[in-house]
Amino acid sequence: MQRPWNSALKAITATSAAAALMLASACGGDEEAPAAAGEVTGAIDVWMGDPIGAAQQPTIVQLAKDYETAHPGTKVNLRFLGADAHKTYLTSIAGGTVPCVALIGNTWSPEFAGLQALEPIAQDPATMKGVYTQSMIDSTVLDGVSYAVPYDTGVRALIYRKDLFDKAGLAAPKTWDEVLSSATTIQKDNPGVNGFGIIGGNQWYWLPMIWNWGGDIAVQEGGAWKAKVDSPEAIAAFTFYSDLLTKHKLAPAGAATWQGADASKAFALGQIGMMVGGSWDLKTILAQSPQMEQQLATAPLPAGPGGNNDTFAGGSNLAIFKGCDNKATAKSFVDFLMKTENLVPVTTKIGLLPATVDALEKERTSGSFSTPLLKAYAEQAPSTRSIPPVSTWGKVEGTGAIVNAMQAIMNGQQTPEAAMKELASQIDAAIGQR
Image 1 (tube, rainbow, N blue to C red):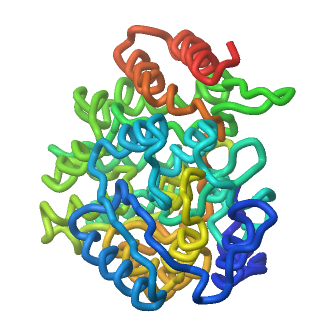
Image 2 (cartoon, helix red, strand yellow):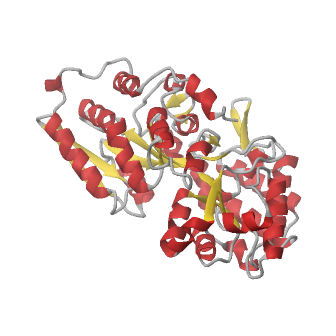
Image 3 (cartoon, helix red, strand yellow):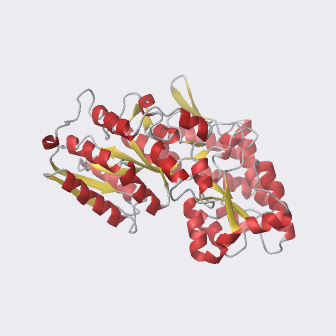
C-alpha cells in the first residue's frame, strides 16, 4: 500500500536534476554519458505511441525543435504511432529496426525488456525512489532492473453526482460498503437513475479491487510468479462487484459488457449516479454534457476490507532501445523531455498526471489537477500499484481471460470460485508457471 501523500513528500531525496543525472549515468552500464555540449550530436529516431494524439503532437514537435536549438548538430526525427503502436514496436524489435527513444505503454515495459530490447536505466530501481511515483517505477522493472523512465500516469477516482448526493444528505463514499448503500439510495430516490456505473468489459476498472480486499493478483514464490486470483480475498472482491449488477441491480443488465465510454455516455445522459472513472472519462462526460459540471464531484476511490484503496497506475514510460546507435543524444533528449517545464505541458494536454514527484506536486498544488473537480486524481496517485512485473503479462491481457472470468460470474455461467480457479490456471499458463 502506498504511503499518504504528505509522508511521501517527506521521503523525497532527489530532484529532477538528480533524475537527469541518474539517467545519464545509468543508461549503458558503468559508462557516463558525455557531458560536454559538443559530444551530444547527430540524429535520433523518436517514436511516440498512445496517449500522444493529435492534440499533443504540436507540443512534442515544438519540444523537438527546442531541443535541436539548444543542442546544435542534433536532429530529432519524430514518428507518431496510432492504435497499432504495440504491434509496431514488436515488429520493429523482431526486424531490428527500432528507434532510439520510444514512448511505450507502462505495461509493455517488462515485455519489451524480456525481449532484450531495452537499455537498462537503473540497475537498482531504489535509486529512482522519490523522483518518480513509486508504482510507475515498479512498472519499469524486470528481474530487479529498471528499463524505462516513467513519463505520465493515469489513475481512476470516484465520479459522482454531487447534486443527488447532497439532496439525499450523503457524503462521498469512503468504503465499498458505503458505495453499495449510497448507490442503493440514489437509485431509489431518483427514478431513471442507476446507482452505479458497472464497467464489466474492462478489467482496469475493477481488477484492483482484489488489492482492496487484501489479496494479490500474482506473487513471487521461490523466484517464480504464481497467480493468486483464486484466493478467498480475490473471490470476494469479484463477487462484490458482480453483485452490484446481478444481485443489487444498480446498473442496466447490458453493463456486464460496458467499456468506460459506455458508462461515461450513460453518466452524461443523467442515467448514472456514480462510477469509477479516469480523468479521461470525466473529460468525456463534460464534453458531452458541459452543463453537468456544477453537478459533479470526484473523490479518491473507496477502501475495501483489506484497508486500502489502491488502483492501477496506467500511463507511459520513455525507453531507449538497445539497438540505438546514438545513445548519448538519446539520453540527452530523454532528460530534456523529463524536465518539469517540458513534461507538464504535454501531460496537461493529455489529461494525465506527470510521473515525476516534483511535477506531480506542481500539478496538485497549482496546476491543472489543483481544481476541485480534478484534485482527487492527484490525491489518488500515491495509492496506485503496477501489474505483476512479468515479461509475459501481455499474454494475460491478450487472452481477455480476466474479463471473461468476471462476465462468466455476472452471467451466471460459473460460480465465483470456479471462474477464479480457471482464471488462476490461465494466468499461470500465460506467465509460464502452470
